[in-house]
Length: 248
Ligand SMILES: [Zn+2]
Image (tube, rainbow, N blue to C red; front, side):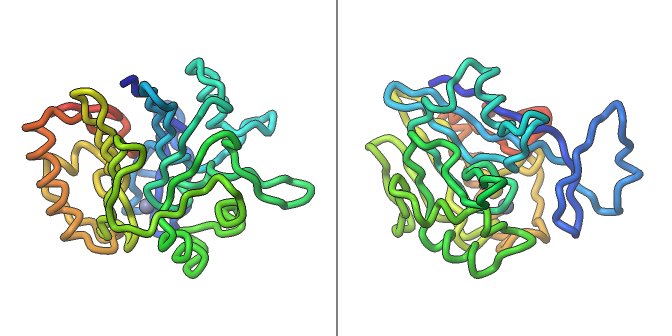
């Protein structure tokens, strides 16, 4: 399988839960509020024998021409956004689901950013996003996920899509967060999204205050690292600046 990280850039995030762009040559981390975390935001494309998969969709920022940056990043990688066949969503926090839908500026109507793709997400996560709302979720940008026909709302805690995409709810980073294993031939790609966001957290025990169940996330990371190391998984780290794709 071929993996392509699609970085939307580097950002800092603090208690306000706002993502502020950070450029190394222009900005100083010390000038950001105390406790600010430096994170990359990077969805991934995986080209398999059957599909062109998109894993999470970033913040959904647009460039100067009003084009979704995610679409531009795909084009730059030689992939037509219309050729995405499946969108897999780990959870609906705004930095993961912001690019899932496009809101029309004039009519305010939301439509899917990848109209030819089937979207897979958890029903419970969708309900939760609308119940909780801002600042972690932006429901107004997610309405197309409720109303469109090519949405598959998953209800099971774990299962398999098309015999090769395995999903499992972890309830660690957030109550209905899910992770994915994509298995083709002898290869396994693991996408832990915000349960396993950076390489550093796989190597060092770290209980994050921002997690719903930080202890569980820590335990899971340990299990995944051990199993992944043994079985040669390729890890995708959504928030890692230096190591988006990694093998132990
Ligand atoms: Zn999150």
